[in-house]
Amino acid sequence: MKRLIYVLFFVLLAGTSYAQRAKYVFYFIGDGMGVNQVNGTEMYLAEQEGRIGVKPLLFTTFPAGTVATTFSATNSVTDSSAAGTALATGAKTYNGAIGMDDDKNALQTVAEKAKQAGRKVGVTTSVSVDHATPAAFYAHQPNRSMYYEIALDLPKAGFDFYAGGGFLKPATTADKKDAPSIFPIIEEAGYTIARGLDEYKAKAADAGKMVLIQKEGAVPSCLPYAIDRKEGDLTLPEITESAISFLTKGNNKGFFLMVEGGKIDWACHGNDPATVFEEVIDLDNAVKVAYEFYKKHPKETLIVVTADHETGGMSLGTGRYELRLKALTNQEQSQDLLSKAITDLRKDSDKASWEEVKALLADKMGFWEELPLTWEQEKMLRDEYETSFVKNKVVFEESLYAKTEPLAAAARKVMSQIAMVGWTGSGHTAGYVPVFAIGAGSDLFVGKMDNTEIPKRIAKAAGYK
Image (tube, rainbow, N blue to C red):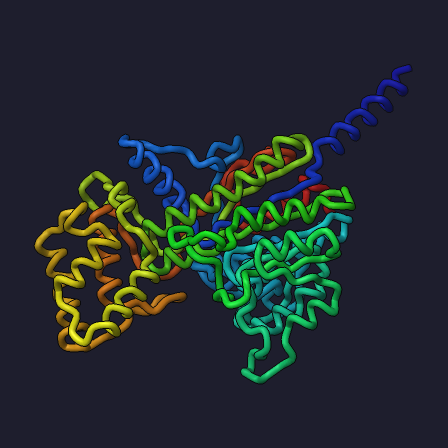
């Protein structure tokens, strides 16, 4: 009798363990999203309600929350490819590597393990499909800049759903030679390519595998910033919703879906706080889509939200023991579009007046009309106007993903000063990144960890071998 009780106990234990296994896995990665980017966004939202404090994002309310370290095998400060590889494979590697170890051997990713376990797999992003973070989940190349070669790895991985802005080098190899377009190669491997959401909806039902990118003519490097979005633009929440619908049709063995908010990093490289916070909100809106799915399958779904590294060295406060984040709501567009508007003004007028420039900055940034400037701040802008418009000495400021009009760069610095947001530079830092989790296996995401632990714990929660 006692033996029968033990047998029944272990059967019950095994059944309970299986029931808690994560059949559906969502893995959200906010590129460049350090702790202050998250906390700053919540304080920015609270200030819009007229109060000091935080208005929680959905993912910060998840029951499991901790921080992770991000250093690579070769650098105290990681790049996105080494960090992406760590988050995808659970192994450290050198800066620049995509899905490879120090000796340039291919590493198995958690997405590949999911596919091996019979799950459907999706890899999605708000930047290009061949960019470092998404690439780290399906490709194995010695250098992140090998965009064409990375794209060739996409059909080899055999995943079910890919989505993003497009492809950076669809017909040019890493050594700058012409090559067959990647699109027919992907289609010949059994993928349907949908350009835009309408085309996706028309093609999804009959497609075995899918690649969703932006409409023809859109910039392939990325989706527009949330702050710049126009009606009809593809969005990260829409990509997430499309991925769920595609991965749940037919085979119901579960899925693994990685979703990257890639342009948080881009805005941080540009030290553009309003654009950063709006990108974090946009990632949270994508998490909300996953959360609606979780509510229908709470015992079988795991959602993990983290970041690959911090970018910009963002600080909340510049010495005066206060913040004015609500001021950022006066900024109508990203630094990139402000830069374009200033370039257009220069082209349209041989000698644009200071009053014309002031009117543009007042309209786009709220300066003077909504946000009073100090004498020093106005002098910074006026001096840059004199140099670049009057003397015609235009030296664009360069960050990793943008070339910015000097006057737009000065306006961005003034806005950060007004909001009291500080920056240590335009590159990555070694700061902790946040980790949040909810659902089946979320109890594994406790205690300070290294980024390499995250995919290992996902695999454990989901039962991947």
